[in-house]
Image: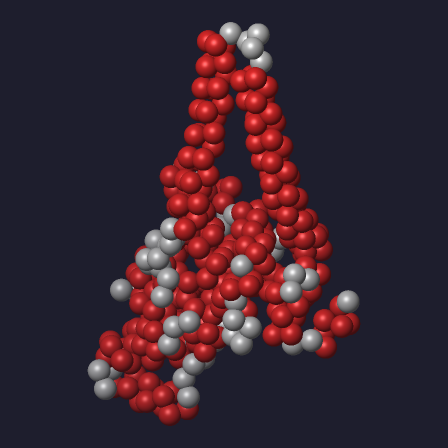
Length: 148
Length: 182
């Protein structure tokens, strides 16, 4: 058996993933191969170091509050969607009424009408552009390079 | 509610969640929150960021639950979502600034010296994504090859060889600290 295969088995040995037959195979190879014996020792030391790498635990309250936090954020998300829909409807309705009023009001000078209408028109174009950009970004497949 | 949840299988809970029952989702979140947090922590190193990212991932999973196939296990599907959050976070962080060492520290300094662990951690961060994942799942979640394979959706053989190459690179990175005598 080649050294590369034995080295892979050594790695799996320390992961506790070898069956009895594979263990025997590794041990009998180690008896006659100094290169793989060295790998065995190095891997053992490496595993020792890795076993001392512990991740910090968060404070206990973090677990107690975890679901509440997820739930609140979920609810807030729905709240924001409803608020945004309402705000858009009100804005469009208000804008429509404003434009209607300005056009029908004979006392408002033409130049002022043009100014106000162009500000409103610009706002609508910017809003539509922003919305389109957001939709485009959402549609794009992100991280496709890392998905299987 | 909780007593009721215990009697329900994951599949049954997900069906309730798909019907919009937010409360049923609590059982899923509480079942996987620790695993999610520690995996995120393995990626991003900062405990507060790991909490935020894992919670954001649960929120996104809830919003996308309609596209989830109830015949499949929840965690591998969720894991993919969360991994993308983690990688996105790392990309943004690397664009903004390198996180100062002390601020991002997540290791307990117990036996080995800090320098070696820091080198080791940098080594983990510089591994290709797939190798970094297997290291996090193997050492910080203590999952078996079979479990890692299910979470990542990769064959056991791929998990085994990814781990081997990841360990090889990490071992090389800390060789001078290992006291191996040549």
